[in-house]
Image (cartoon, rainbow, N blue to C red; front, side):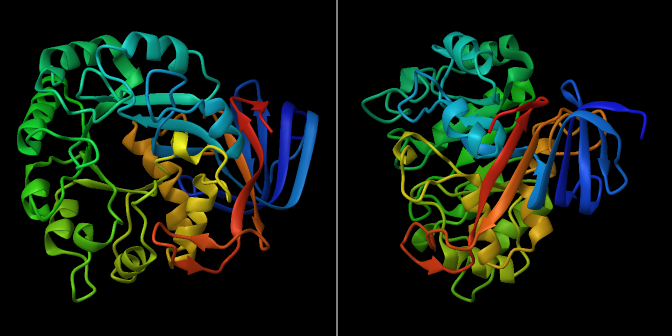
Length: 376
């Protein structure tokens, strides 16, 4: 390695890659937009050397449920402003656009962003328009248009967003889900599914309709939404769904993270497949700023082991997005997306969506590299 000439060499007090098993002091060497070496033995000359002896270096963070959209969505935010400087190098849009506004979204947000953006296209052809729910007109549920757009979108469109919660759906949720499954079967794509209110449609009945590879989001809500029963154990129907391959995303958002539910589920050995923010327009300028490192910190405070948390914002969502060789890893040959985090012990308290608080400090982005170029 001594004779190698790297464009960028980053040394850190701790490097963790759950995909390759790295954990310890070391460095990541970058040439162009690729990682060429990583680990404790990396050495050599570089055009630029950066040293962070107190920082944690991870693969660029992956947010599986967010709202990157420069226009066309009531929830959308510019990913290069709101996500990338805070450590997220890849974000999946949860239904920000549908068949009607897909082309503009591809041109402006996917191809026009430094952040890597993928889309779970909304089953509603209108996406998330201003002025109301995305499923408020049955004519908006256009199965043919959605399937056609997915075929046109290629790898940019990962799956189909079907959110039938009361905040998004004024139609019969069973009918909407049936149409979503129709598109999924036609295209071979998974669903990103938001459940309907359990008192009106039991969780067990909804999960029974989902298939291996479909992702259920908003899983750590409380009250009637809770996936934890009165006995403090995760509901049997949730475990059964997970055993047959249904995936679970613990997004935060404004109403979807309860410390009590998360702590009970984690204590019962139930870890989400992914951790995400559901970060959208309402979070812009929030104090403290809602982002993925802060959300990770809440899961650590709830008792989830470090490596499990790191995996759920790296290797695991990368696998779900079918991008394991490109992102969520520090393996040589992968894209040079890197996030360095430090723990701010004096940060504002960690608070859930019901104002329940936990101590523990907060992870914050110190440096972000996207495709070999320094962001911040």
